[in-house]
Image (tube, rainbow, N blue to C red):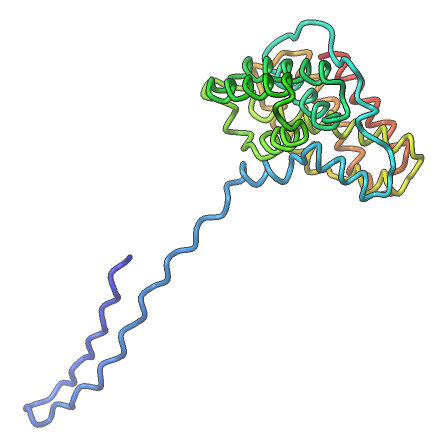
Length: 274
């Protein structure tokens, strides 16, 4: 606590003798102690990490709220990537996409396919620098899922929460230099599935409601453009896709199914290059 403020000492009137000195005014009441300072607002990274990275489960709920009946899990391909990853940045983006796939398929997936996807995510997290403690917890959960000793639905919710609440600029571990690329991949993968759901529905109103989030690609785009050490092909492809997503979201006129097709095409092009 700061010390209490000193009371002001009244000035004495100048006089020739004691009898002419005016009596001092009553002492002012002590000022109340200053209130404790309010806690600082969350850092920009924390705010952006939670506001600008909608989780796959949030995207799925948004589809339901928009009145679409499409099952996003049915749109998830069995295999996303075939060639080896070219650089840790590509690994990070792929890991995010696979996380979105795992969350959205969840309990509807064949157990063997679900476990295989979890192992791919675990491997990707290890490459970007996730700590050994968290990796060991990941291993424990995979074993429990294999032995039907863990609720797949609970794990999906926890995985979704970890990815969406992570402060991206902090990285996934002390050696992680990929920043928010895992989150970017998760958002790109989930948004591509949302765009496909809009296309399948033919619902222009849903396109405008679900794809108008320009601040999200703007944030990831700013990060992608600042990476000097990123793989050239991956960085260029990511910048192109995010630029398209942002341009669509910023259109002044209402978005339509045609715009959803543009988003899906940009995502497909990106994933083909990763």
